[in-house]
Amino acid sequence: MIVDQLREANTGPGRRGFGFGVLTSDDFVRLLILAALIAGFAIVTRGATIGTENLANVLIQSSIRGIAACGQAFVVLTVGLDLSVSGIVAVTLMVGGSLVTTNPQFSLLGVAISPLLAIPVMLFVGVAFGTANGFLVARLRLPSLIVTLGVWQIGVGLAYQVTGSGFVDSIPSSIAFIGQGSLLYVPNPVILFFAIVALSYFVLHRTAFGAEIYALGGNSRSAFISGVRVVRVRIIVFAIAGSFYAIGAVISMSRYMSATMAQTTGLELSTIAAVAIGGVSLSGGKGSIVGVLLGTLIIGVVDNGLSITGVGPAQQAILKGAIIIFAVMLDGFSRR
Image 1: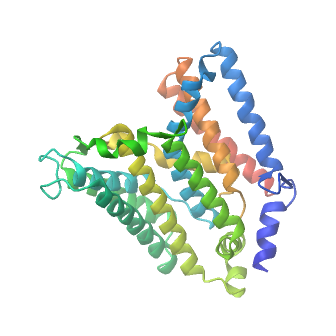
Image 2: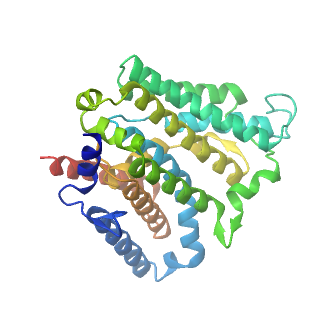
């Protein structure tokens, strides 16, 4: 039954696969939309948006959002919603920054430690907060919207508590290669982004655990009767999301060589937008990680194109909000 539900979620009406099932028909439409946006902005800006440097910049800027969006997708597929993204990233970022900084004013331990030691701590913090989300939602059966909103506030508060100011500088250059380096001319953040997408695709579409996630999102009662350990799956899903948020924090710290609250602003909105535009149903049980990848890139191209054409941040915010509402409307219509 679980396998059948997984197959239905990914190959149902309008979702026949292209390229061995990796790209669904809906994702193919998103790919065409992405191509049209790139071409449209290229015409409007007379080619400024399709320069190699600018395209690389779009991918780099999309990497943190995209990695976090993969975590959000896991949660949404199980009929949840995670508003704690920026809070978890903030506290993880500040803990990591305060551990490696050479500025005694912001040092958590009074002495800088190696990034090789700090990064595992950051991952642990992200997983711990994600697991706490999962426990409260799954074990205590509290609404994910309220729980994650509360955890977001706790994360932001702790981020300020750790640093005293919500700012850390003097990050050692030894960590810069993660966010600023490249391999074979491909920026490391982009490599990590696509690696997370590939890992997420494998987990969701090639493992029994992924089948359980789709079954749980499709019908939690039927999933339970079929033998899915509902509480365990939900807790693990939130823990996975927390680990992805922590990876985003590591990339952010190493790219900007600082830890500031501004680096986390709006991540929850951006991840929900990427997931919704990517076709992951907010009602759970339907969607693909490839769609999330395309949704992330669509947002990245729109942000970049609007900035280059001189559209202000207020108008950009309005447009992105409208895009989210439109995506949710399409999801609602597709389920009728």
